[in-house]
Length: 352
Image (cartoon, rainbow, N blue to C red; front, side, top):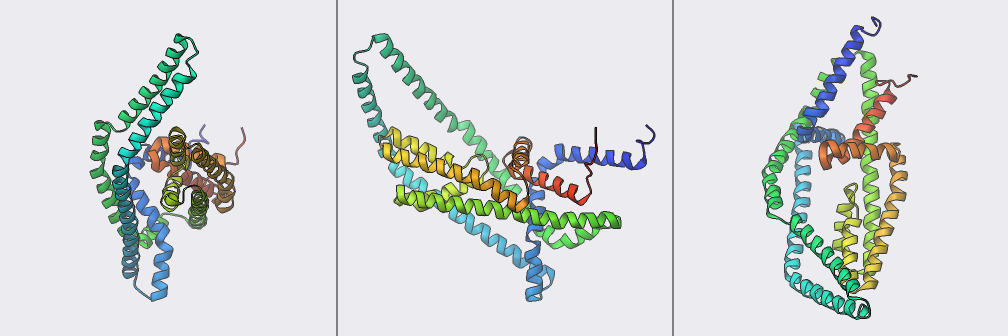
């Protein structure tokens, strides 16, 4: 027992407890600052390249890169908002026609149902009609729950929090980009030479893995974008560009994927009587799903050396702890753990 209660083991236990408490209580409310630090680390090579290429001081290089980030964010936000407003205006114009069309389809369906069930007993007909009415009622309730005033008010009330978080993120990003070399020196002052060597190895490896992760996601998303654009160009040329971009954006979010867009679209075409269009969209959704499931493990494995199982576990736990952003934080923590183990900071060579 006295061998276990050494000063080093007590210190390690204390640090472990601190890390667990930080992960449970502090990390969930520090997401903007953590993201700012990660973004600063991500853009650090660009800052150094700007310093060396133009022979600028760090402050000028940081300001230039920061302005570049702001411009890129402004372009993305402007394009997203204008596209969304355009789609909403178009939807408001075409919604009455779609509703009339759906009403006609529903009346036609009821007439066909009466024809098909004319020779059946009244109890069977009533039971079938009752089942369809229940389905419609549950669908109506789901739509009302989706767009009820409480949810809209709750969503609107989150906008100030989001704006504050965005402001904190941008300010913290600029300060981290300025102070990153000093922060590194401050951290390394507390390490021994051996530990500093391991941490440097871990930092290099982690940078490589993070860039590999981003590269893998970009490659997969571009493959999905190309496949969806080609597919929609054949199926619905009018909406090919816009819908392929929407599918691409949604597909970047883990768990959701292109099925979220294509499944309702396909179902609508089936209900409105266009069986051919509905079938084509369903086939495209299946093809995109198969492409992602086949390509993702191989690309992720090649780029970061992380197998699908730890990735899935990290995403699930991250989702439960941190919400949607945890889908990205979870795999990053798994990558961090693997890198620390390879660097020798975490040792797992024990036997029971």
